[in-house]
Length: 409
Image (cartoon, rainbow, N blue to C red; front, side, top):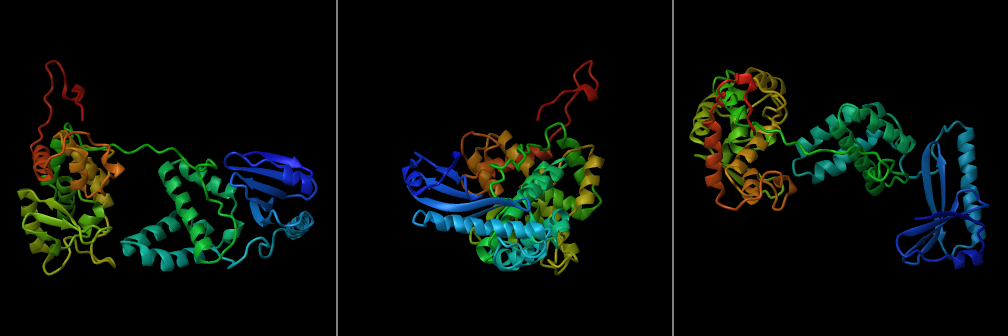
């Protein structure tokens, strides 16, 4: 793309070459902000582009058939609007937006009710997650008009969040972009999306995929602590996560109707008619038999006082469990990754691992484990869970203390 300043005349415009690909942009040296966009398809159009109150405003004025004098008049009209709004201290409505004069709170509520609640495969979880995300990272903008946010505002927000949480910063900007997209596409708002194309505008932090799992050196004390854990909700949650690889939400939201003998049919939110199957070890079957006696008539494995009817999370108790086991740097989701990694140690292929974890066919999430031959998933799951439960602490070599023993995971 090239930007050039020219003295527009009918002859000059007609003589402009068509770019071989993409687009070329030219600006008039007479009317401030007046530009001409010429695409490789041959389409040509006039536009007006200026930075107003820190926000770049782009308004299409018409195609090449628009007389040059008319294009200049429209550009000058916009220049007058911009000057008057600046003179007023940018008070009053933005003259370059149309549609509802939305605050972020108003936009959020419409997005949750009209889009997320209607189209999400798990509305309760989706609504809770998005509202929490907004309250945590965007609440300082809740009463702010969405038309007043510039790309620089978005960049500053990302920079501040990325100092401690790079991934969270990226996810927040993605959410912000989605909110603006909803305003434009579904609410009739017309304005600039300051969070659009974050990569192009360098509003993004490089992310590294997480690879942490419980390895051979940690597994023995992890299992030891698991069987003597007195918090039974925590013990059963961890055991199910470790030995089935199920997601946290699937475990805490599990119903007794999903379990028959040693088979757990875990719901597939994207394909409700096709749940994925987890085979339960005898140890899990025994734990669940005890749990059933404690939960009584509740339909949930983990009944709770929340609006959903079941336990929502176990953050503090899980962290305490890890400390008692002498393990650090592990999250609840790493239980799922541990199951997949120990499947890989048994030479299970990505297809087998993906099926066991309920990944969509061809999912890139499976690729981090292994690239070995395919086989029956139940056999590999049995091997992996047996290996985890029977793992032994590494023996120190002669002349070495336990602390200096080196193991690989």
